[in-house]
Length: 230
Image 1: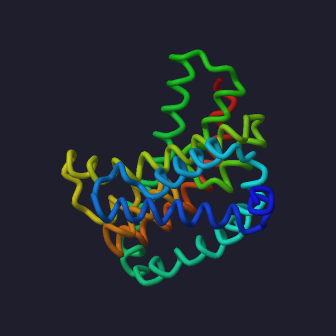
Image 2: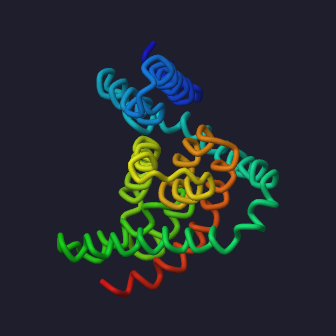
C-alpha cells in the first residue's frame, strides 16, 4: 500500500496541498506571523517524509507538478500592477531609488558576511541571489559557480523571514507609505514577501509585484559585479 501511494504522481501534490491548508488553518486560528503557511507546510512535509521513511525523490516526482503553476501565478501578479499603473508613473523615481537601494543592501550585506565569516568564493556566490525569486536565483548561482541547492534553501528562508517579520519592521520604524512597504517586501523577500504585501493592500501588492521583476534583473547585473569582489 505504501509503495502504491508513494509511487502515485499525485502523492507529492496531495501532501503539499494538505500541508499548506493546515498552515492556512493555523494562521487563521492563531493570527500569529510565526504560523506562516509556507513555513508550516515545509515542516509538515519534512516530518511526514521522515516518520514514514519516504525518500525525497518519491515526493518530488509528484510535487514537481506544482512548479508548472509558478509561471502563470507570477504572470498574474501583473494584474494589480496594471490597475495601479498611474500610481507607478507618478512615483517612478522614488520606486527605482527604493529598488536599487534594496538590491545594493542585499549584495553588500553578503559581502560583509563573507568578510566576517571567511566564506569561500563558492559559498559567497551561493548567497548573493538570496533576495530574488527562485527561478532567477538558481540561474545566477549556477552561472557564478555557487551551490544551487543551498541557494534555493536560502531564497526560501529569506522569503519566509520577510513574510513573517516584515509587518513588524514597518511598525517599529513607523513606515506607513503603501508604496514603500510594497517595494521593501518585493525587493527583499521576492514572491513570498509579495504574498504578505497582497494581504496588506492592493497598492502594496502591486508595488511588490513590480519589485520582484526589477530587483531580479538588477541582482543579475549586480551579482556579476559583486562576484569579483571576493
